[in-house]
Length: 85
Length: 208
Image (cartoon, rainbow over all chains, first blue to last red; front, side, top):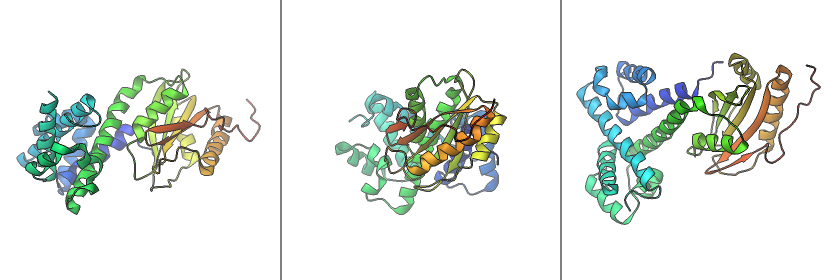
């Protein structure tokens, strides 16, 4: 039985979660996302989704996601118990 | 600056989940907007939106784990505290399932690799010591540290936890691989079997 490394496990999980959040059901698109995350890293993928030949709609969804992740972590760093409260 | 983050957070959260921006903004005037993420059931949201929020939350947990794993190549486990803090970061976010991790270490207790051995249900996951032994040999490690979370946040080792540790010790010690510790993460706390004097010794005599 092959154990996935944490990187492999989380990359695959993140790809699938992203597909669910953005309602991507097309198998090829999912494969593109998983491969991009695996080879380029999650940060690069979220930052430059337009480099991977994905549709404009999906790229915009990923860009919203990137904005959200950045804001979430900056907020957590600033104030763990509340954003700007 | 803080307000900028808040505004961006609310707008992107609204775009991702489909919850109206005005609704989120109004809620966040008197409440912590992170409640939407951490306690989605406390708000009047549809099932579909709650599912999306659950995915976003899981994504954030994976993101943290991945970041830590990327930095993990330089991690040394010098103490039970350093191991405890490491696994706490990896496992404290999981509230709905048990996950078992094993870190393989070299002779200076530096991390070679951490692998996910099992991800189970809310109170159970399957672990096969033979498979862990195979991986330990594959990574050519000198020692391992096992860790798992208790989603119920009970910060105590169960009898199954002790039995599993005993099995791992019995399989790995004859291969000259030490089981340094078994860390149990319960929410924001953790306990170390080693610190509590509960690490078993090999139940069979080992000739080296």
